[in-house]
Image 1 (tube, rainbow, N blue to C red):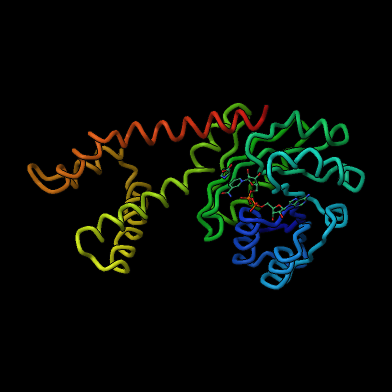
Image 2: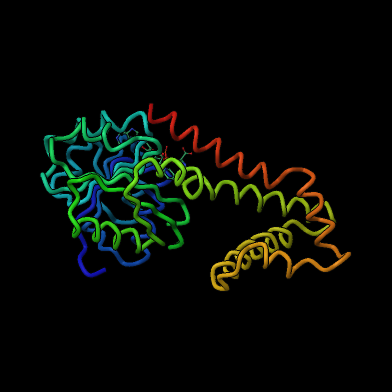
Length: 270
Ligand SMILES: NC(=O)C1=CN([C@@H]2O[C@H](COP(=O)(O)OP(=O)(O)OC[C@H]3O[C@@H](n4cnc5c(N)ncnc54)[C@H](O)[C@@H]3O)[C@@H](O)[C@H]2O)C=CC1
Ligand SMILES: O=C(O)[C@@H]1CCC=N1
């Protein structure tokens, strides 16, 4: 990354830790990273692991930050923003990753004119394979948006949307999506064990099959249906398995899961 702005994380839980770990992996200077985290065990774990500065009180963490990443639960966002507002530089970009919390709600808790980005990352950021979508408010200038993109590109892919209502669908698909795929990995491995495979081998086959299939899908640029057909020999094993997935409604269940998460994201914003 060409410029490395100081970043304060408010909340150092699962998602913030994944981003911090991803930044650490790509050599982001520890001196540029701070966290405000009231839970001493969590805070000290981050300090020990990444040699970053930790603070029990959020206002102490944001003083020199160019980016303030808000990574607390959605119901705490407005209060946390009100607490740090007096310490924020007017040009500091508030980048919230909280599901459902919209730009208007955040702006109401901050000084007028504060640049704010609503963002939705996911936990594969931990291994540099994250997917983050950014939605800036009207006070984020082109350079600040480019900096936010560079920052999150260091832990995966980044997309920008201008239409904020899309963020609930983003949350439902890529924000929550890793959990759906971990569930599928677990279930595939269970299926292998049911066929008599040792658990360790079943786990290896499940994860490499997911990873290999995702890589093939991305690198070939082919439609998933075309790639599915290439696995499926007439009268063979795959069509026997696919028949069960279709009869059990897996396609519909996955669509319904994304729609349920979409509705939940919208409800969190009410
Ligand atoms: N876990 C995930 O995969 C993703 C989570 N998110 C969003 O990230 C946010 C955090 O989620 P997780 O990391 O999963 O939750 P988490 O519960 O692991 O982390 C939240 C952290 O905030 C800390 N905290 C509580 N009160 C605080 C305060 N007043 N000031 C500072 N920190 C405080 C907690 O001690 C905890 O460590 C949520 O808003 C969620 O919607 C977004 C994308 C993906
Ligand atoms: O489950 C949640 O609410 C958060 C948002 C996306 C992933 N985890």
